[in-house]
Length: 427
Image (cartoon, rainbow, N blue to C red):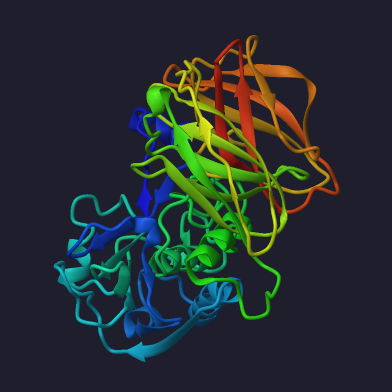
C-alpha cells in the first residue's frame, strides 16, 4: 500500500490533508497476462504466516488482536466466493526474491530482513504493504507474498496514526487472490487507505468487503457454496469515433433502485469490459476516463437487467469530452483525502470536495440515489489555501439508506462534469 500520493506542496498537506496509503501490487511472470484475470488454479490456497507477525514487534502495537485480524480477513474472502484459505505458522522471515519464479511458499511477513526492506527502499514511508505475485503463462498464480512495511506502525484498536492491521491484511489478501486495485473509493481494494484518525475518528467500517469486492472475487472464483442463486454479468465494448476501441476506461455498475455501486472494471486494449458476479437486478452502467491532473470525462453507457446465470450485452459509442472540472479529494470535519467518506444513515454532514476549477456558483453536486440529497441550498466555497479549490455541500443521508458505496457527481454547464466513484460509504 502506497502512502501520501497527494502531490500538492508537502508543507500544505500536513495542515490541510490527511495522509493516505496505497497498496503495492507487484507482478512477476514469464508472460504478459491481463492482471485482473490472474487467479489460483485450485480453490484451496495455502498461506504461511511468518512468526514475525505473531511475535511481539515494534511495528505492531502491543496487545493487538493479530490472530483475530488474520482470521477475520481471510474469512471475509472465503464467505464471498468458492475459495478456502489455509494458514499455517512458519519460521520463514523473508519473501522470495524477484524473478520468474518464487520459492513456492506464499508468505505473510513483517520481518525487517534485507529482502523485505529492499521492497520499500525507494521510499520507506510511502507504502504500508506490498504483495508480490508470481504467475505462469496460463495466468494462474503460483505464489503470492505479502510484506507489511517494517517502517510503518499497525494496530487493531484504532490507535491514532497507525494503519489498521485487519484492513491492510484484507486488502493485501485480495491481491494475493488475484484482484487488482478498484476505482471504487469505498472498496476494500481501493488504492487509497487512510491511517486511523484521518477524519477525527476511528473508521472500522473500512475493514469489510464492499459490494464491488464481492462481485470481483466471485467473477474469478464463483459464488460461495451457500449462494445457489448468484450470479449474472454485464459485458460489452466501448468505442470512440471511427470505431476505435476506448482503452483503459473505467466502467462501473450502480443498482438502479438504490444507487449503490455494485461492480467496477476497466476496458482492455479492445475496449471490452465485463462486470461479473452481479446479483439479479437492474443496473445503470457508467464510464469514466480519469486524469487527476487535467480533468477527465464520464457518461452513461446505458441500463441493463441481470438475471442469475446470464450475461447481458451492453455496447456503447462514447465521446470523451474533457472537462475542466477536476475533483480529486473528498472529506468531512474540515479534512480532505482521496478515500471514501464514512457516513451513517439518518444523519447530516458537511461534505468537502477538492480539486481544480471548482466554482461553487457554477456547479451542482448530485447523487443517483434517492437516499442521498444535498440540502441547505447550493454549494459553498471553502478556503484551503492556494493549492486546491474546495467547495462544500450539506448532505443528508436517509435513515433507510442501505449500507454500501455511493458515487458523487459534480456538474456544471455543458460537458463540465466529474465523478468520484463510490466516494461515500454509508455504514
